[in-house]
Length: 147
Image (cartoon, rainbow, N blue to C red; front, side, top):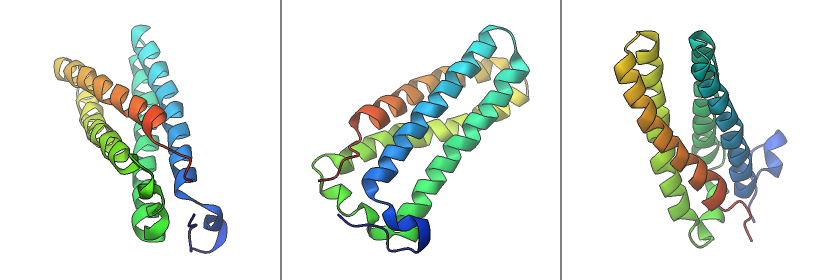
């Protein structure tokens, strides 16, 4: 098992740990998503929007953070991870859901703030489908234990 060769707190970091932290992050922001939908159902549109902004910032931070770790801080970190059977494919499928969901969330924030209700609702339905895929593939199919 390889660890990060960067100094400081990154010495203990492994690919499995990064994936486990990302799984926890997906679960946490999904709780925010449910809170946002609950606010929407109660007619608290401003609260719905504010929760979505937090959801957006946390989701993009996780995506950008993973890219930063995997590509610049420690490019070899995921070498052992990709030797796990099915790990590369599982990550590819997960990213096929999560990246479009993050991009769609950007469009949703714009349409929600511009009062384009019909478009916003349509994007919201597609986003929920993509986020469901993100959640299922991220939490249940990405291996976080590397032998």
